[in-house]
Image (tube, rainbow, N blue to C red):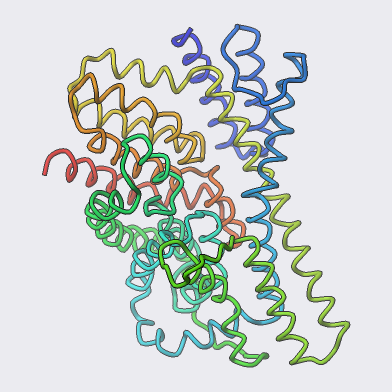
Length: 454
């Protein structure tokens, strides 16, 4: 069953890849192929992904997965992405983005002649923020609202700027990370000690490798794409709003950092989430607009920009994330993940060999699924059994898998972070994935060498 399902899944993957390369509508390609794989799996008697409540019909159960995907995505990450997309549109309309760029251009203009150094320097800063705000698409969109325009106006190409911003979300580590939360349950430790004792020592060399590789990769490709570089020449911004508007784009970052679990500033913790903070900051912007314009109609109309921005992100990004989720369910139903694991075990590899294979497989699975969490959740629970048989530390095997899962997502053109970032940057998610490929292959090799050899 595993072999047959895996072969069928590979055929579907090849067809999907070919259609996407030919620029077929990605939403349709992914959701139709996902439904077909689920249908084939059901007809052939494969174990289907669990439904909390079945329709009573195997045929209609297949479409119930779409219903659940819409419900769960819109209620969680989808709503968050739409709120951030609306916020980005809002701050752009009222001129807050221009105010931030205008203010930041003053000190950063000293580095105007070194755009690729600026781009590489964004990576460690963004990774620190990702530890505090563990939402890849959410943080990327926040950085697109605040840091992206600064980089572009300092001579960084739109594609280079978008690529380094997605790279900031490449390591799903830290106490607040979903992957960390799952990992520490498997290895039976606490998240803080795992973060400081295991994750940080591996993250440091990987960050350095990314910074160096991105510097040369972006410089090479931008030189090749002369038109793109010429299109982002630095220009003087005409400021039409008070300079204090610059606080609005970075206000969500400040609030999320202050109230994050990483910092214990308050005796009684205050819990905030990205969606709520976005809505709050929009109303802060509305107050600023009311003070500046003193025109109630203009202020009320500015809120319309927020809702229109939410709608634009839904139709272009959220729906594609849902389609990608159905596609990943089809792969799981056909036991493609199980086939990858079984084939590696049959090769009779040693502890380090199997650990390397597991890391590579989870990297590839994350690219195919567009989700680091989904890939890690599929592979992670197998680790205790493997380490028990191989007499090796569970942490030793699972740590590179954590990093491989989130790195693979950053190279996937169907991942939420690439889809949402590309929409704002007005570039193709496939172009970002191509730009990210070399740095993350290098980072993957550095990780394997550092963890298993050095």
